Image (cartoon, rainbow, N blue to C red; front, side, top):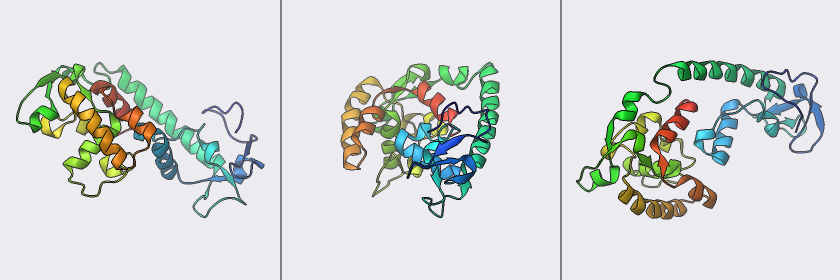
Length: 227
């Protein structure tokens, strides 16, 4: 779309192309949707853990005045500057958190024992250190959350914002949590994949997002996007 676009550079004077008609324009004459709408689109494509827009993403959504819809009211230039400012603030906060002794996941959190969701459902109690615990991936957790919320007609669990699992959710234990011991994980993954297909989750999401993933990795990912 454009060469040498860096987050600290001004878009002034750069030439971009409309994603609809490929006509070249400067950033003042191309338009994009509001940032929250762009983040929603990116989240649907790349997963909720990646649902945030960088300055480099914006030209991929830019259209000229001839091709734009009424909702595309923000100029590419203004949106790039706004995104740059946001990411500068976000980087400062992230670097501050990383400089703290406890980091993104505290030592206390890592050392806590959590109980398996599947075992708790069947009346048993299996304890696992949080640093060793695993969850059934993002979409797997979304499906489990839908079950807990008694969503009767749950559709597209990878798109439904009500079902997104937060850091607070991941820190819970037992029936309230999303941790599975190895035997329960082995039994749950095929069931969750089948349920995902029934709910219309795309095949590549099922393969990538419904699988055993370390709880700590998921915690770090979900906290990076501010959930």
